[in-house]
Amino acid sequence: PWTVLGQSFGGFCTVAYLSLAPEGLSAALITGGLPSLDAHADDVYRAAYPRIERKVVAHYARYPQDIERARRIADHLLTHDVVLPNGYRLTVEAFQSLGIMLGGGEGSHRLHFLLEDAFVRTANGHELSDAFQEQAQGLLSFAANPLYALIHEIIYGQDARPTAWSAERVRAEFPRFDAAKALAGDEPLLFTGESIHPWMFDCDPALRPLRETAELLAARTDWTPLYDPARLAANEVPAAAVVYHDDMYVDTAHALTTARAIRGLRTWVTDEFEHDGVRAGGPRVLDRLLALARDEA
Image (cartoon, rainbow, N blue to C red; front, side, top):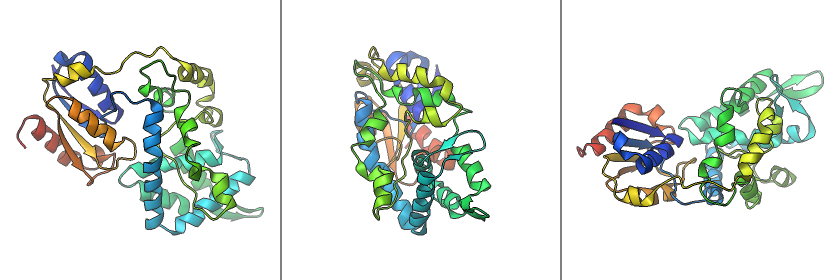
């Protein structure tokens, strides 16, 4: 038996491990990764979009000058066909997805510095700078991790309902994320978060060969259960989890409901860290979880 540390999706895997083979574990530590045991992907994203909006509003409150900068970049993308050096087609939706940075402790600052000098003056007018394009390319490309894009949404697949591009469908229920409507009026442009959309498989050259596979997975209806509530209710493995209050990526209400469903799981709820707490404050987070799992705290 071994002690596992599950960060984010790793926490989902750890809860599955506790469901399927708890005899293989001596302890389970989870950071920002307690999944809902029964939510469909639609439920996950309906909870996510209001949370994402709050993070974007908080970013603009910190850097109000970014409201106009983001609108200017989005307007430029609506009227220009921008292709990044690696062949990635930078659309408005792709630009909005840079909001994924807002889920990390330093993400708001990183996004601000990216927007700050996005344009340079050229003989043909203002264009997106090489530096901006290079950074955006690094943040948006899935060349290093294409499987992330394929399996990200289907990690919620566990009944007869297909995921069917859930993040894209549910986004339509939140019209404030519509960039064209925001730019037509005077609303701030809302960034999005950690979600996968079908247009990514057109924009990103690393994902284009995987479009057919992604469509097959999105349409699949024969998923089996991911977790075993009865076995979790009888859990005997020492377990501890940190739940980041208002985590951009993992819904706090879903996480706490699951925490109550796992026998003996001890939780630490904190707003000291964002989703990347184990990276930003590893010693503090791990020491606390180990103490909880060992019943020393």
